[in-house]
Image 1 (cartoon, rainbow over the protein chains, first blue to last red):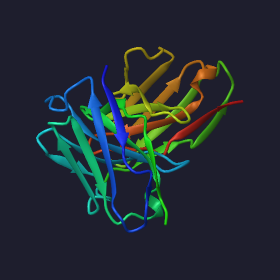
Image 2 (image 1 turned 90 degrees about the horizontal axis):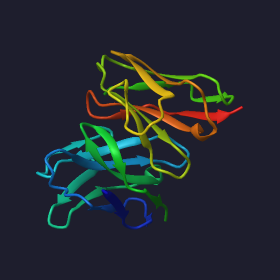
Image 3 (image 1 turned 90 degrees about the vertical axis):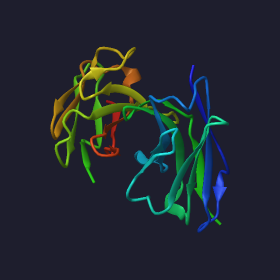
Length: 118
Length: 106
């Protein structure tokens, strides 16, 4: 059974860079059938797509976040990562990693809350 | 960017009621639309893909329809376990979610 697990700091200071890693188990991140990526949800609000990456490294980003986002993949560790720079309180959210199959998501991580605060 | 307008934002209904949620795209997205259910503290769950296809294992009381810019999600007979927030998601051009519909029991 495929599992995804987010990891990273739960607290980030304003203006710093948020960094999260998603570890995939029960399946290979190098599969040609899927993209991998991140979706976030501010407390009490809706879902926002952040971006996606293919195992080869090709990426797609939300235009509203593109200037601050980098998603990368490490096939040797079966992991992919998110970096979001220059964070503000508006970036406080639960961050989910996910597997995309033709742009639908059947598999999600459990989500990790990241709070931006000094 | 494609905007998705979902309505209503919240809805209260009784067990057994027929419930309908709509999602309107800002441009033609063909049938590139999915519906998700999210319960508090949990990740979303895929219910409907490609506008009208029921995900495996999802009860048949859930259904979806529409194409182009106008889409509908229906629960034919509301059950207590259906209390959740529902989101549409387009994938014609990148990905965009609707703002969500919070469903409560009356």
